[in-house]
Image 1: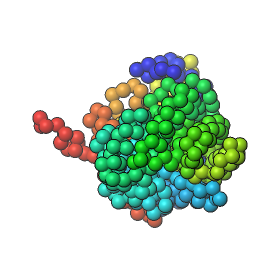
Image 2: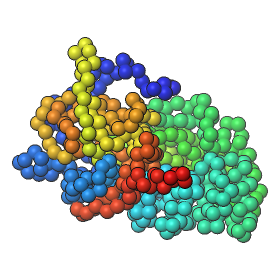
Image 3: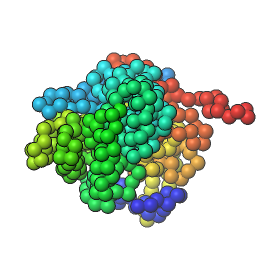
Length: 477
């Protein structure tokens, strides 16, 4: 589906029938679903409604906002670490060996790299910038895998010199580039081949045809993947350790993985038959979904690991293959639910839509520069009044940003207390993945800070930009 550059037609959205169901009472406007919010987020106690603001690990969000300003990404360190540990345990506690690669593209900083290293995870990077951050932060290089569909010569050179654990090969040209760099450095580089298996799974939709038309990987159906393997095994500076596939994002069931694993194991069997060895690793990529709304029902790390082990065990038995190491890349599933964005309300407008319908526009001090996903993907989010509790009736609302775009929407349709006003704080849940990572300076707006909270203390993870930072890029000033 193609979106019009100006966004959806306003007339298509005037009916409240497409909005979320109205809350039963005012109390439900303040409920915090445990599947959506970080584990250490709760309401404060007290008889005074203003005392019942959101708290993170015991710290009042009003105090966080006063210290660091808004908009602000707030990261629950305990939640992040517990999710990382859960994935590590899920793939460690098995007769089938497993590896968990945190996908750095979801969100990356030196602080989170230290947490990931502490929790025993590996790291997937896809650019020289992500690699540079990992190296500067001291992340173990043998636990880094280098992805990407167009790795530059300098990026490959740096990665080989640093001793990264593996490369995921994405093209014929890359085979030659990585092999040449490895030869220059007198080393042998472990590589996996990224295979386009003809499967795409997005959320609850599963389609198994017509998905060769993409920039990533080497096609299984036209023989490109098999040819890449032939070229790799002939080069003494490359060591083929595995096969990789990625079928989509925000996946809630195993259907796509079932077909993908079947085809990937079939290729592994072909490698054995043609080249006389078995690959050590099958990387099934990422895509594990998270809950953005209370009725979303993602699998746990244990559930996903059990499913993948069952699929791989069955498929390998069918081909008479030894069980390989299983690898996954759950970036979104770790950091996504661990972070929320804190905004301050600036203006509120009541819009009469006609036919008995109305909508309240609640404008906040951020928007599409700190969360492009709503405008880009029509993503849905959960939002709560964060600075207090209200007994006011619910009003159908749209949380919008401050940018000069009609499509600058943070939460398209939601219910908020009718007395939300300028100065209130709103919290939007599950913004850890791809929000700060895809943030921009549109309209010359500085990117917000990220703070990590643990044991009642907030510490900078990434400092916020300033106008002076942005002006410093202009050599004419």
